[in-house]
Length: 91
Image 1 (tube, rainbow, N blue to C red):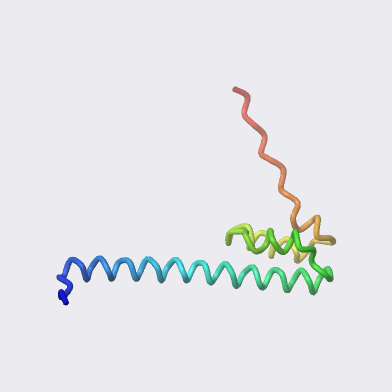
Image 2: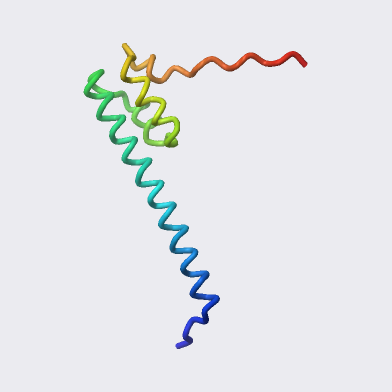
């Protein structure tokens, strides 16, 4: 077999680090989603499947926003309501 040359080793090392970062970010996002779902269930009871899908496919910033909103929300609608769009400047 061929022994990898140093450039190949550096490329492999960079790929491993890149994959580790990706998996770490993905695992963090999945953990956030699980926590948000548990909190929603505890606060509001059964969480509809549509909401479960939204939470499961959300990115970290959105999950963090929902986690903060559910602290004061009185309903699932309040947690998942989209904030109003900023006013558009006159063109």
